[in-house]
Length: 206
Image (cartoon, rainbow, N blue to C red):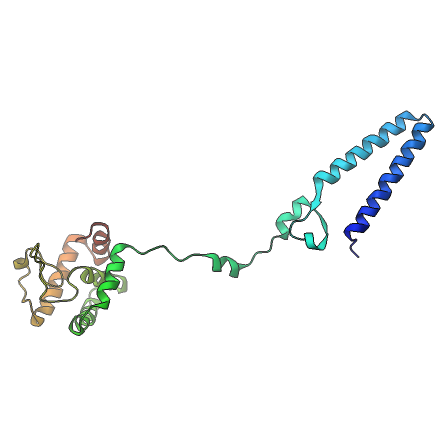
């Protein structure tokens, strides 16, 4: 049965009283060397108690005396608490935010073009490469076949520059042609869509 703090104090008081009484009897009988031994013993015991034993901050409410080296064992580990404290990944890259904004404003035709293009690219690329190509086009031509940049003159879903080098109609009939041109451009310049998307994220153009 564990002793309460009051009981521990009483026990310590009785021990100190016994030692002092013994010392007094020894000194009275002129046994000085025994008194010195008792004083040194008492001092060592006090130092040992103060440095080796301490009140555990974890179990203080239980009034339990534990050695310092066991403190690490007192701390409970909760995987759920750790997972709850993990914060989500910080703000996504600006290009990703732009893509999400573009997706919200795709017209029905642009959305249909996107779904068609993804099926088209699946015949040539793996899943990650298809997604990277989708990201590139959403960041460039928004799957709008007749889009044209008024500043640079780049046109089509792949933003060919100059527009004439693509050689595709800028209407719905030119969708396959524009997809093929975009794929050839990406493969020829970057090797694959993933590298093209990485460049687009870093530079704001491709």
